[in-house]
View 1 (cartoon, one colour):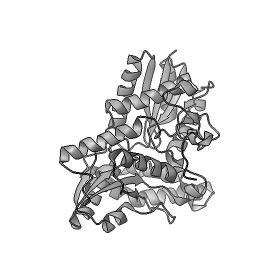
View 2: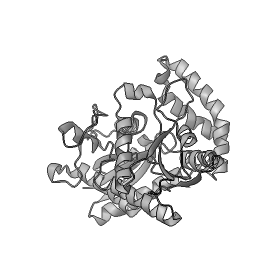
View 3: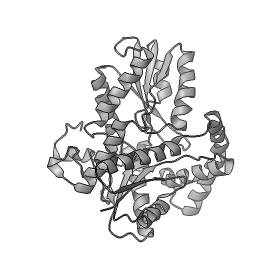
Length: 357
């Protein structure tokens, strides 16, 4: 049976003209417009366009400084690598990428995938940590796109997957390898380990999102694998709206570190993009070095063979639904109760994982 796998991500403009970047931002701001409590569509549209027009020139400059965003290219590389891995496992699979806020959008990719003969459709957001505006929103967008394309057989959705049995060990090994290449000792008391995580509005957490718990679990898992007892978590927040975001800001953490060097792990990113190449490698490095801290940032292993195997495991388990006999046990996704999503996080609901409730 031929399987079509759609890998989902935010996307970034590959041709960062002012018009393209403004459109990109407007789509993001409109998707999150209810955060300001205004449910009237014309007002949401006007407000989103206003914010996009104000932010776009600065973001265009960011893309110029980093030489353009590699996110979309790296996402396509992941799709090629995943397709090869699945085919090596004997799967008749086609893997494509779709983005929430830049072309190609999910509806277009679903139509292309079905035209290529897919008999089953798998949706895989490339976000390890499940959040409302990332994993949940991406799955909802693809489901809508599938209906628009005339697909009525249902979508096999995959939710959060940071508890895949090899994901955190792989992440741990990658951090170790990076530190070894730099000659940095993570167990030196003057070395600080900092996880920099994409922030989220507190409203989402108050509404039931478990994103903060997933962050804490994944960071604790990697730090434990590294045998590092003291570590720090900071959030990369985008405060375009007058609302509360997750704390502490990563910049605040850097300002308060008592260390000689800092190793930064971008734990919620699976591609290099403006948030890593500018916000971390440039802006956070500048703050760190101004305080006399040597700055090291672990690169994103977007096509590392072990990471691709993690994605392939998720796809295979979602297709086969082997349950208790599976290497990767997927359960009903509590973050997306209205969809068909299955995730590694659902295990906690059945008492199989220690909870921090």
